[in-house]
Image (cartoon, rainbow, N blue to C red):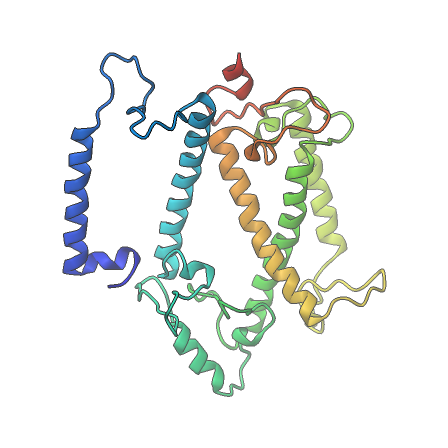
Length: 306
């Protein structure tokens, strides 16, 4: 049977879903919350005598559960777009299988085998699948077919945007970690993360970033002749490192940075903690744990501690 949502199109999949509902109903009736309120929510005893249901472990369970809910939603959304299950989304093959099996979702375009066969044929027109950025194990990944064969101008526009967002995300991922330990003069006492936008200094800093970004956009522009690669603005330091290998590494690192920054933002919206606090780490040299006080959460960490 296929993995993911496509299994619901089979009789066995529907039967398994019905069985899950029955088992869930039995478990709901077997374990119920204490009506007297003497136990914490979710405390159904300690049948194995582990004595691990401490406030610290309850906090970890809640945070891990929140992250798991976000992860599951991400897996579902990625499957609807790509037609691949959780492991295939990472470009990994099933253990013991000699080929990559697609779930055949109607949301996707060509399969991997079709793409591999199409690459063998010599083409005269511009081919996006043969450009820098198609790396193993996914190869050329464009399930929604944003790029078209022969449309070099459209490809360059998308690749320029990808490189620009990737470079910005790589800097942002470092900044999201560094801001917990060091801040610009005048911003030392401001919270980290989204909550800084609730202050005058935060809004002023955001406006300054827009101005700087506009200046940089006008200072460095893409080569209109197309002689240079997208994102190539020269080599002012003479490093001679802009090779095909380094361009591939930049693209992949930028893609990972974009995913990382989105993950940090999502976790902050759920927990109200910045990038370092999400790992349970305190700032070096600080004697207390400082919450970002995000408006997306309920009580902050400092309020909970009090």
